[in-house]
Length: 182
Length: 184
Image 1 (cartoon, one colour):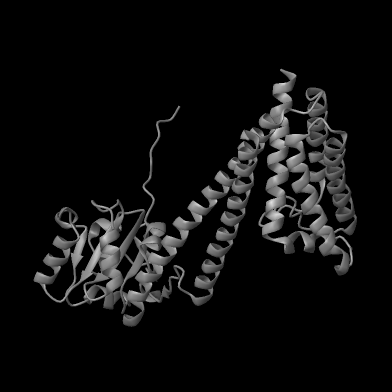
Image 2 (cartoon, rainbow over the protein chains, first blue to last red; image 1 turned 90 degrees about the vertical axis):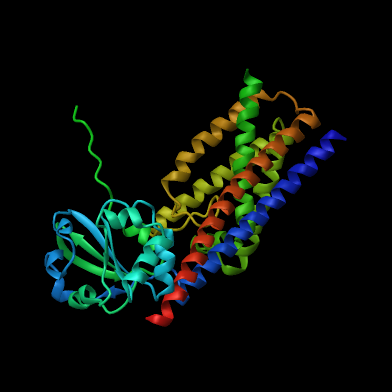
């Protein structure tokens, strides 16, 4: 009797394994469909050719960025849904090398945005720049949000749209870890 | 000690054979394509693929219940030799032929690997032959079979869980993108 129960368990387990395998196939199909439809983390390059190689401070960004080996300046607006999702998904305090430019209509709107997404500490550290007139973005050549501008060796390297939190996490600057020699 | 080692080896063999059979059941087109690439006509490739799947499934069960039987041991050796011969044909074709030996999805091609794999299969059969003078009792064999099957189901469940996480990330990412698209 025990042997029959064990054999039945084994057969059932193999059937479950087969169903799991079919489920994985289905997940892959769905991913393929998302990819074909272009809704799978597809960032678009933003043309900032005129700004490439220029110091970040030239465009009104903090001078501290000029000294960064690798940094990302993320342009967010309080009028775009994805920007709010990205702000919600940010780690607090902001990771090293990440600066935010908030394009909000008023100082009150900026304060509300910072308060709502728990960014007050980062704002006090000067990591959040409020740009109500979108002057910084306009001078760099950006006319949409959310956009990430990559800084390498203190100079603007390139820019892309940031379609999702997951994509943002892949482009955040890696912190440099120092190890003791020997 | 010999029996313990032989039991472990038999369980591993059973797991590999059952895994390979299940993968072929999941995606029979992959192994059918491999057989066609080896030069077999399309009319033969499908029955051959089915026969191979049934053989792997049968041997995977048989090595749990009748590891002592000459038919089980000979079957495993023949199966390993069959893959080695297929690898030889593939090497003569001078073009990469996807293996699909333990399922589609890997980049492995038929070649030296199947010849190298022949050695552990032969050693495994020798260990099983030396360890099992007679068939294990039905309950013990059934317990081993159940353990192997549950292990396979567990490994598949890990893949499902990972895929679920990935799909969830895709869905949330798409939702964020939808929010962005109208303003773009």
